[in-house]
Image (cartoon, rainbow, N blue to C red; front, side, top):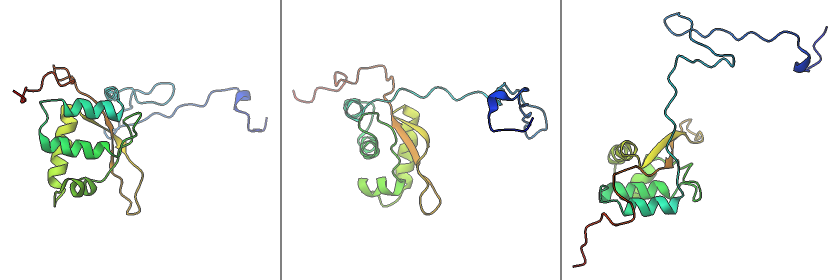
Length: 157
């Protein structure tokens, strides 16, 4: 029977090719062709809207001023409602924060990711130079205290 374009009439299922790793051993592949031997990434933390995220960040006594400045600049590029899709370049963040080099920004972004304030969600759109910036989502870590300002020191005495 010639193929007429309708997959529903196909009598036998299409075999899923075996995936091999670099050692030549067959990987554990499920019915959809997904390699089950690879541990999946942990579920990304829940994103929050930009306003709530900025409020939590500014009221967290664990974050110093320079990381707060870098984090706020990243948040300016995030979707307001979802806190996602922020993909500014490190050079742009450095310029907005008054740094002459990108190295401090790179270190601060790494620290913000490690502390749970930013989640690297892949890459943004490809730029004309063929590169793509990291794409972030805004997340609030569990620091052990509320992010409502109650943990801040009272300086108005």
